[in-house]
Image (cartoon, rainbow, N blue to C red; front, side, top):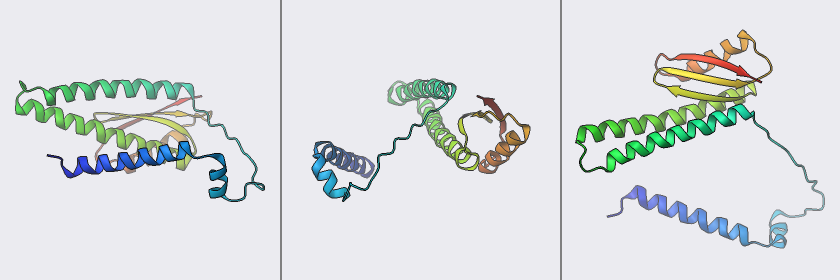
Length: 164
């Protein structure tokens, strides 16, 4: 039996797939007609570069999270595991998902408020923040800590590390 969540997922996924195929197969003339007059528009190329250390930290973190998620999913799918073990695995999996969402929110908050690229890692009651900045001031670190502390609902130990 298909539940509502699966049905919505399949529906939205198929809609996205159809729209992407339509967009890819669309000719340039059709795009010009849709976008309107393109004679007065100038092409602007922007290049966004992110600190290599932050990219390396994100890749490493993503690999670790995927490994943990796979191990928890194996426990959930194993018929020999007890219901308590499965419950613990499910709770750990939900914690991983929640932490990932909070990390992204915190990175966006730092980006919007301080215009800085950052990497946030939540582990238990610790939040480690790596910020790409040439300004290594204690005042900036304190402001970032205050901003992140406002987003937390429980007491967390927050550290800020600067990288150029």
